Length: 357
Ligand code: AKB
Image (cartoon, rainbow, N blue to C red):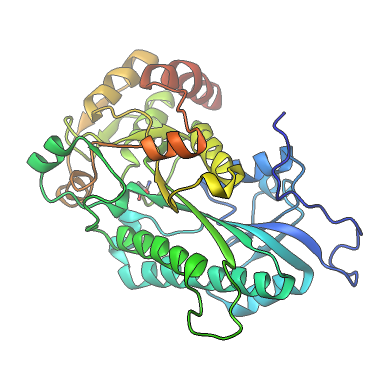
């Protein structure tokens, strides 16, 4: 089992919500989402006191992984006040977001949730730091959606994109994630710049730009990298799948266990070794056609066809083919362990197969 993170401070008093002293906890927003369940499971294994927020009631398995759960909107200050009445927060994993496809149907709502929610949580973190006199660590999953490569020829030429290239996102979600990164930098380095009583570095902001994520346990919804996981889950469950991007479409992917490992490794890295606040991590970059071939090999009889949707295609075409993650490798020792083949053979195919068995 992994050693506890340095931030793992359990309540020594055992007073819980009704006692006079508040328990220290790690806050996880979007706890009911794809990533939330996996993060909570890892925190529970490390015996870290986690408090969850989600817009919907958590399923019993996820609820059992946390000390407490608050159901409501991260934009509701009343909800955050209720939470702070019972807990001191010393670390936040802010996973709640409206993804790239869903965000294009309701851009203003996406902005309210993705940026307004992030701002509320950064403010909460800064206030916790001020009242308790210690920096609050803030983990923010950003996304390859912050990139906006102008056209396919440039995408092919660019290859592995660095963190500071092509930052002109096409989607509201990408705009919001980029804004989240900027807000994090501001709260860490410049918050209340002119105030006489300002707290230096109230927030220790750490962010990863995730590629598409493949989970064997859940099927995502509302994203544009969803064609990868949708294809695998459809193939495993014997459903025909019409892929909404062209066969030659290529973006980076990783698996859910690798994504969670990356987030927790970045959380545990010594601050002095971090030269950036936001890092790319790569994995493998198959074309949609390569995905199809692997899915058909792993699940004989799978029926995958291609029916590109022009709008969603244009979103994926604006994301890079691959990312340069050399900063993550150098600063905190990031090392992906899955290749596309091993991700399929060792993780996706067996787990997805047993899920639908
Ligand atoms: C999406 O497709 O919106 C997300 C992402 C790439 O961040 N999966």
